[in-house]
Picture: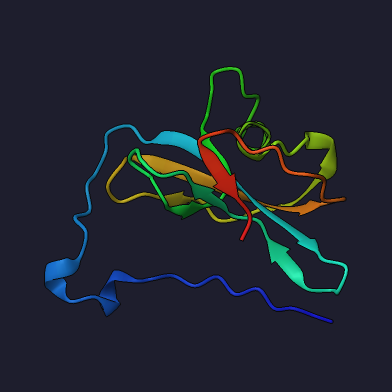
Length: 137
């Protein structure tokens, strides 16, 4: 079974002008990275792993890719994505094969430059989510 992955953008052009988010310019963009983890299920279906944030907080209930802000000890942004995936969903770095760095995205309202990395999970293992986060859809 084959699968096609399409990256869809919810462009602001499709929204009424009054509902567009403000676009701010930031003197310094903060660096962050996310992992786009994928694997093939036993039936051949392609699975993309998402995190569903726990209730409460600024991101309560939102769907997201595992990732976050770069720490000073991170060698590069790929290391940031791998560290964050391990922290958020218990994904060990030796179970991940980085496939590609995807185009960097700058947020419009929070001042982050986010580097996404497409990654294949070698063998999905039991998830170990942190107590305030849940996972996979």
